[in-house]
Length: 177
Image 1 (cartoon, rainbow, N blue to C red):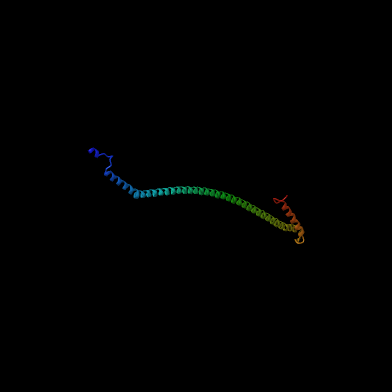
Image 2 (cartoon, rainbow, N blue to C red):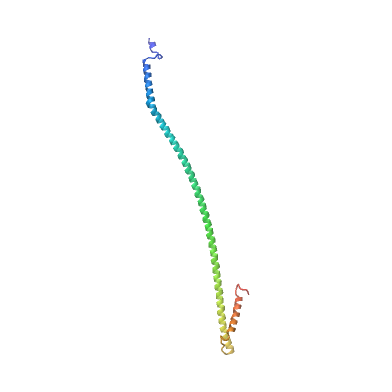
């Protein structure tokens, strides 16, 4: 008898109570625990999805910022090249202007000096001619022995001065000999 009571394939009251308790626990789990667990899993999945989207967006923003930085760097390099080229052009123009101004100043100084030399030469010739007229009159007075009036012989003196000027003009550099 002992053998027939211990057969596990024959349902007894313990099995039915265990089965009812299992079904109650399963219903409680399905009704109260599983929705909260599902909700927590869904929230976690949504949070992970949001974080992945934010990471992708941050990656795209970083990529765009990197591209913008590269573009700005290239633009800055281009502007630097333009500034250097402009500075070189300006320096060359300043150099050319300075050379042109220096050449003009040189020519002006040389022209003024030539004019001053010509004027000084003319004054010297006129002074020498005037002095020569006086000397000639003094010599003639001594030779003749009487006083000669400069006013009476002015055309002779002027003719001698003109001849002296003509000789002086022919002997100046730059004039035809």
